[in-house]
Image (cartoon, rainbow, N blue to C red):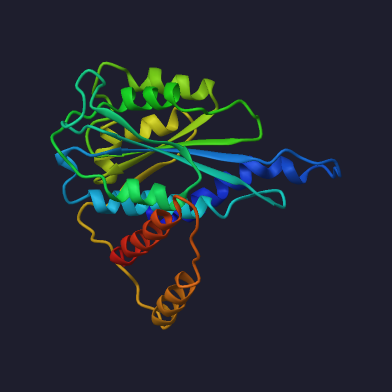
Length: 260
């Protein structure tokens, strides 16, 4: 599956997970559902030329999930972020770093994601999956939807932790593992990225390494940009973190604009 079908896949996943919400009519208050998503991004040098595409597609996933509802109620969305395969990270920790614990602040998530850079290369997929399962607070609410998206372009089999073992742990925690191979569909299959997704009922997705990001121009673009600037001018900040949050929002608007 490529990212042309990403929205369809996500909608299907959400509808399947939420189907039970519409089977009963119950006037009693229901506990709000939370969607917890861990994004694991390969930041090794082998991702040079692909890193921006991977960031953009991961952010598209975040945007799609931000509109999800459980029944008639909007779900809470929490995003965590890891980088792996970067030689600037600790070898003892498997070249893995938790960039952000589960957060609801989309501006902060965007800032952390788009600031990641590539360096070196030792990509241990099984180990980073296992680390995220152990270090993040996934919770036990049966209504929650738990998703993991791991993106990279080296064989899924590298490292001391077997990916099958890590995915078995994910299944125990009801975390659905989805894989994003940054390369050809066939190479992702031979590199066991498809198998990784299939083991946990997740989706196998690919990013075409030879295809640049394309912004499709529409007659509404200019007006949307103007309205966005006007909306940002209504932002009134207060408190100790007010100005920093205001500046952060402006920076992430700039990041989004550069992806067009």
